[in-house]
Image (cartoon, rainbow, N blue to C red):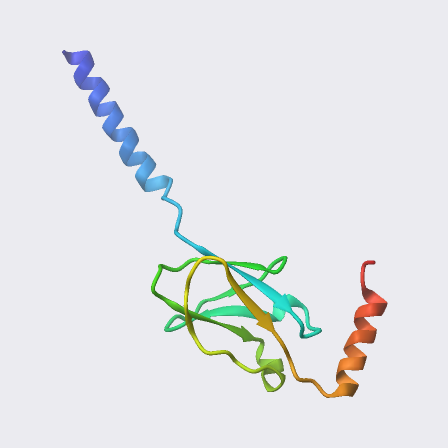
Amino acid sequence: MTLFAVFIIHWVSLQNFRQNFFLPKKPYFEAKLVNRCLLHERFFAIEVLGQPEKFYFQNSKSKIFVKKGNKIRLSIDQRYEDYFYTQNYQYIRKGMLFIAECNFDTSIQRALTSIRGTFSSD
């Protein structure tokens, strides 16, 4: 009986240890980016309505750690806000796809294309 009581106490303490130190994974949604802006994806982020935190893209994907029912939108770095049409907030759902399109002057577009062509890893 004593051995059984020790086993139960040990098992309960292990459960408390796991809950306190190995926190459960947060739910997240994944969004994809199609970048037609000639800017690097690091300038784009996902904004959550009412939260200051932004979720940035890596390899054209972003993990958004929010609960279902929140609204999100694609945003761009402040330096390029004049060339990018900020989208409206949408309710979050699985498999969201954002398309980034910018309106640069033709001279700026040619310069960015030239820079990308010169420094690309191809």
